Image (cartoon, rainbow, N blue to C red; front, top):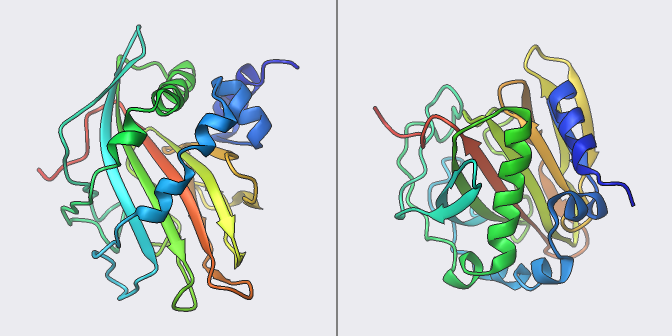
Length: 240
């Protein structure tokens, strides 16, 4: 099978985003599906997000940070830190220092985890060269136990970084959850519903805005598990 990585780099460079089905994603990043699947049950142990300003209880998450240095592309974890965004990028939760529980040690020590984050960072570096990526990793579960879950309660947004990777881990018993990508000038450039585990959307955060519509129960109380990775060259975002 042809290597999908060069095509992913070309499409990301040309359009500002690329959606990779699971087969293409694992091939482009040289990661194993069985090894990735071994991490899936950790999403069922995510603590509740207590910072939601819309009053909801539909989101659980963990958060950890890493640094990737080039040219070796080596990845290393950094001391646990808060997640912070300015209000210009996140009108709902911006300006808050949000402290989430770190990602479990068994996840961060898994070779497939290191390879996934490093391979995505290397792909992004082929689009826009960087000496170092400052990486934030977010494990999310959005559930419908109370009837509705909002993957992006802040609406269509940018993250204030260089690149974003949105990875679907699992989707169960839900309706909705359409992901939409817009050019920063306004027009929609892509819309699709991610249904396949380990499919992923890679985005140039300076060029596109993204959102995912609410999810609803599909006959049972379901959930949508994702891994969101952000890559920034200018350091971690933090209060002035």
